[in-house]
Amino acid sequence: MPVSAPRPAPSASSSQQESVKVFTEEVVLTAQVTDQQGRFDPTLHKDELLILEEGEHQEIMSARQVPASVLLLISTGGELNPAMKSNISKEVAAHFVSRLKTGDRLALVQYGRQVQTITKWTSDLDAALHSIRTKLSSNNGSNLADALAESVEEFAEE
Image (tube, rainbow, N blue to C red; front, side, top):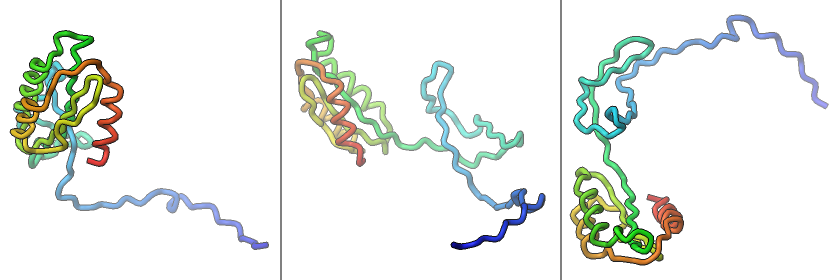
């Protein structure tokens, strides 16, 4: 049976954590910038941002928008909502895709009764627009739960 000696009580100086100072050239902060209505504002410039650290103004060296990864689930089932015809879905999806920026990635899934991947992850927005125009089709039913589950499973590794 091992025997251990009693530990000495920590002294006041050893129980306090020592501070360490490290020189840092850059700190990356992630921020989501929206207007008063909660909409994304792409016009923001770094000079319009204010970063304070312990009340001290910090100089901002750069600000950039990072590419988006968008999984677009498109309902093509007009059974529950007659307004959801494929032409309207194509128009709305094409308008959305045309607003994405160079470098953004997109995957397209249509669902009605069946779930179908139209485009796997791509940065080729022109090819995605072509897929919307040529592969999107009307479908009966509306199986959103299966569309979400299948999309999460299929695109989880991306």
